Length: 100
Image 1 (cartoon, rainbow, N blue to C red):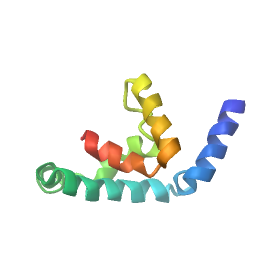
Image 2 (image 1 turned 135 degrees about the horizontal axis):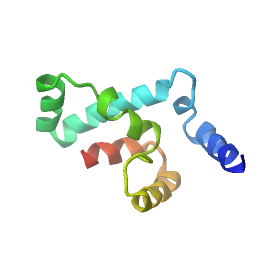
Image 3 (image 1 turned 45 degrees about the vertical axis):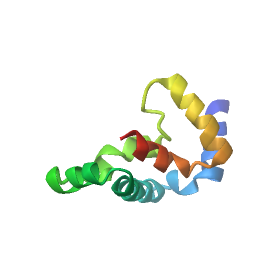
Image 4 (image 1 turned 90 degrees about the vertical axis):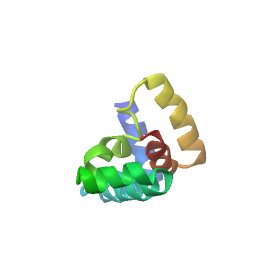
């Protein structure tokens, strides 16, 4: 119970739209992944959007929503979280887009 309380407090303070009922922040984050990917790797972005007709909500929803907790290895995720919580959780979008 204490861990859940700590997580919810952290999430509500750092990324309140991520834990809103409609997950609007996660959806906006996915749209930002598409924009970042278009800048970082235009060829991959074109392939995903035009050839596969895939939106970022399909391939980026879980990593954006969980701050990459679903992307093993967990020891790397914990180090990533150190940076995210120190520098800003908004960097999760850039970090995930650069991993693609």
